[in-house]
Image (cartoon, rainbow, N blue to C red; front, side):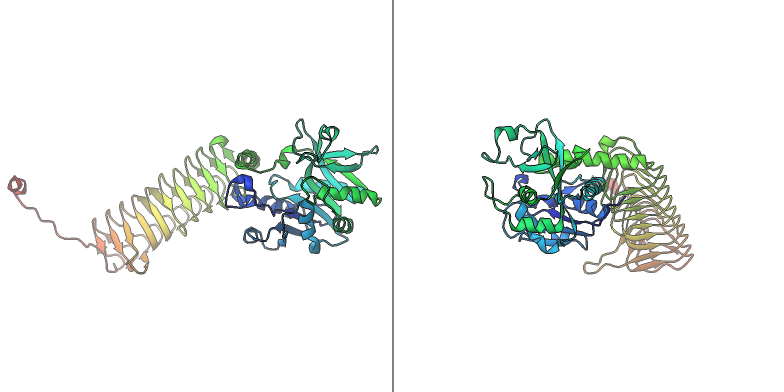
Length: 458
């Protein structure tokens, strides 16, 4: 579902968020794998926005964290929400429908944005304000309606003197989403003056000017108050994270994923999981991890920006920017580092570490080995405690092991070195020269037994 028009969405995010007690701007704090600002941006784009404008402050700390195509406007001084929207004035066309939202309301949904835009356009209003009723409206601006039910004004309550006792008793509040006719908004912003105890330019103060000019302003209640939860400190961030995480879990479960214990599972917003996959307890899926169908992930596994095929098993393991193709087997206690790539039916077993290496179809690294900067062919078996010595102190080199190779336990490969197809290595070997196809490579000192050695030590 899309709104009648492709609105311009202005996201106010110029504040530093001092209540977070952090050197990081509030809207850059992570929420389920995205910075806070990324959530309303994603919602606006999913709602069909023709243009998204983020209002930042002169430090310009948000720009590098925004998707391509998002415009940035600068509010030079922290002078209120009205001044913040005015800073985006050059991006607001007179004939555009303009949506204004805050950058610290990450749970806003595309459906809510579409709904309020459609209500605004259907009413032919100059402005639409989203509202909800709260048992405790403390801190929110109150909606004052006229006898026809339209909005007469919004009264802020942030400081003493902003509102009367009767106005503070109103339970219907402004939840911070506005829709405007672009031309009316630009005219009203140009005439905006500070009319509050803090001496700032509040965006809701354009409402009386619009009404005085004969324009219609409506209030539009929203059905999901949780979507307007705001983040001002780390307590609220944790609260919002819990809601967002529950929504992510529910989405995957409804799509056919079994999450055995959601309370013991963390899944980021941009993770994709195929049907009939099982996520065991203690598992964390982060970044843009992609998991296919019929996989089993966990228990106690962490995947970060990993790509997992169908039917893969990952038990008690840690994967970062690794790829495991269909029916691979990982773990327990394996560590797959960036650019580890296991082809179908490959295995990385117990206490195996793989980095920047390809493991061929059906090949196995069963246990206690480090494979780094290497290429292993198909149907090869790497014995226990094999090491690729890939670094000479200056540069890294690759090891190449062919198809159908069988290496014995405690083999070290000093790169650069190649082992041909069908070759073998002897146990305890340090392979420094190439091993031809079908050959047995042995590189170890001959055993010597010294008789009576124990008696000599006495």
